[in-house]
Length: 224
Image (cartoon, rainbow, N blue to C red; front, side):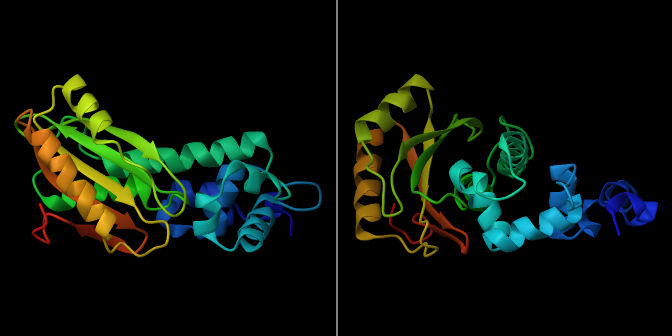
């Protein structure tokens, strides 16, 4: 049965408005974002085909523009819509109480880094700059690498810290492999950055390594 012939209460958009987004399946949520189907295929059927072709929701959200463009029914406008929806979700999870909110627990920073980095297919090194009350000044991605790693330059971290007049810094990066256990290189760069920041009276509060499976805090390990 074509989507337009479905009972009103069973159509994804109407169902979302009446029962909330949590009542929809992955395919139904995707159908709402797609907006319509293609010739011979309604939006829900198309959404299911897209998820099956890509291997699930995780692959869809992490997929690059080139990979998504190869999927039938996903043109530039729809890909842009999907990317925008994912980024809105990440930003909401990263700073649900506002950019000037104070970080009260290590989990606050971990949630932010996880929302921003966990699903990326390549390694990204980021900094969270804080004021004297540990309120967020801003979040910046400083270095991008490959699936295996990213080169970090302490001089650039120091430069951005002074630019923001930050009193404290939390650094974080992702492991696309899914294993968030810190490497020896991770520990070494942490020591270097802590020493460099200390020269200008800035504290390195933590280094978080995140993946889809969780996170590891080097501060909680006693390595800072």
